[in-house]
Image 1: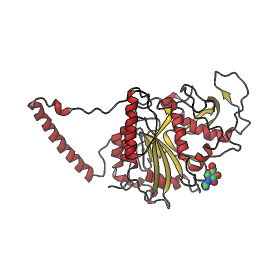
Image 2: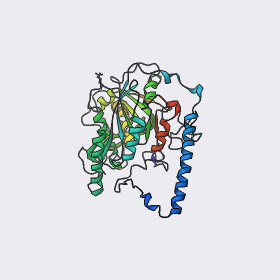
Image 3: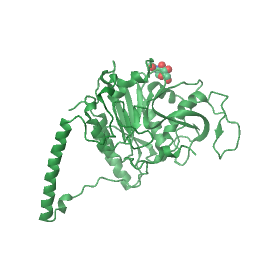
Image 4: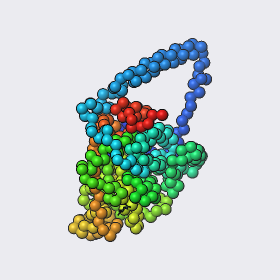
Amino acid sequence: MYPPSSQYSLLPTDPEEAESPIDVIPQPKRQPWVNSLRTRRFAFLTAGSLALLLVAGLYWSYVFRHSVVFPSPDSTFAFSQDSRPSWVNTPPSEPLVLRIAVMTRVDGFERRNAIREAVFRGVRKEDVSIEYRFFVGAPPDNVKGKEVRKLIEEENEKFNDVHLVEEIRDIPERLSEKRYAALKWAGSVSNASYDYFLTMDSDTFVRFVPLARRLPELYEGKKVNPREEPVLIGRMSMHLTYFITRVPDGNEDPGEEDEVIKGPWFQYPAGIGYMLSSALVKIFLSTDPPLPHHIHYPSDDVMIGAWIAALRVFHDETIEWQFGSDHPPEVLRPKPFLPNPVETLIIDDVHGWHDFPGRGDHDAPISWDSVCTHHVTVDEMKEIRRRLEFLGEWKVE
Ligand SMILES: *[C@@H]1O[C@H](CO)[C@@H](O)[C@H](O)[C@H]1NC(C)=O
């Protein structure tokens, strides 16, 4: 069986509680709490607790402003002054130019707002130049779906940052097609005009300034030009399933999947998110037919690693490939996607990309290096952004 199930089982703590089809679209319900003040006694009690809450809130904000340590569980953060890396104070000579796709559920209104507010708003322009879109599939064709569609239109009038992929229904089976649509959006401009295409989930907290400032360290002194060289950055796991295009675009049946074959182990960017150099995006989009992208969740991240590996090893005639079990045995020779093999620089950034402490296989406390943290709730995002250690990464209005 692939992929290893432990890797993907939905976490009980997964704040996204994601990837379930949107038959039911939860709408924020406003409690008419005023109506429930039925008796004076209740009103008195409520006023009393509100006053208490106010005092507690004032105290809390006093503590927050006047202490270095944010009141959070000890295991959530790991800072000590002597661990402060030197790159913290070294801005890049030129801003890093990023195109960013955030994968969100079509009805993920609250999450999108949180990401706008806590992640994108006010990022230091001297360090990073950002162009982002939220990618959503088409809502169902029912009453609720129409409601969602209307809300998205309103959202776009305000923010103009939601990319609705009409051809793809917003269901988990089609997540990899959503990723491919995002890739095409990224590559719709020249690779000379940006450095990396970054993909994140709607429960990923990203700190763009350190992401830019740590790059020289990640390159380990090598001269790397992402606009000309294929580079993948993220948190890597290993896998061995490759894909061969079988399902054409425009296919209506979400149950259809591209052909799966087994070959040599390769690295793929596990779950948390990833960065592809603009040159690699260009290469990905230059194959004919398109790279296989009809691959079911949760293999949509394995797919990225499989493309990179296939671009290199499909040319190697000494490799023995294996079909899936439902296929008659025969000698298999996958057809290379491009005339020449492509070598990609893969950077496994273990300290930079990880899960929130206690959630997921790659969990770690948040520290200076944490540029991309996965499984973060809306409230936690706001909290992390306010850390004193991270002050200055966002402009305060
Ligand atoms: C764009 O990327 C390709 C690799 O796909 C590279 O050969 C080319 O030099 C890049 N173009 C520019 C202007 O950097």
